[in-house]
Length: 220
Image 1 (cartoon, rainbow, N blue to C red):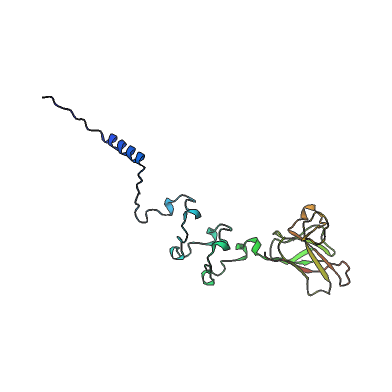
Image 2: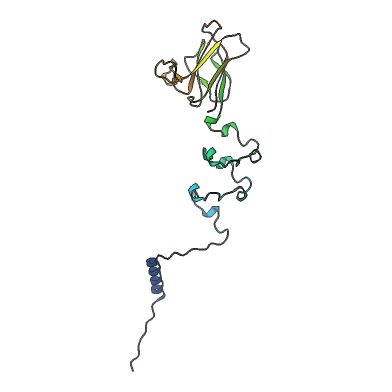
């Protein structure tokens, strides 16, 4: 009687066949991770984006105290549309957490007190300067923000004698009446732009005259 030799497949062959069956069958297997096994150290930078977080998944109760600070929030990342009604209340805002430097430029009021005799700025909110060509009742005040769409207010300093004041936003290419921007004959043509305002001061009789004045660009 002949002896039949039976050769069993090697372990490597068995694994290869199983892998092929799984690949052809499209079967998916879930990997179960231990609790707290994935933390900040295991995540690549920018691995978790806004699109990958389900709505309402991150709530106040899931954030550690002080976990979200101003330094960790990108500029413009938190908008009014992204805040639920009543999400930010007075009790949730730390003292000093919302300062002038943390507000976007469109949310700030920019202002300056100008000495009309010296063409200098006596006081200001920051970033305001005087453009060349100013003086003698005609001044060009440069702001660190774009001015169209803002209300511009100018008034004479009360410690002076009476007089008149007019103001308009620069940036027009020609003298045109009834528009938001006017042509400003500054010393440098590049200063005739929408971040500059022209302020004219005069006596009560209408004669051009140097005056001290306040000028402010209100928030949008």
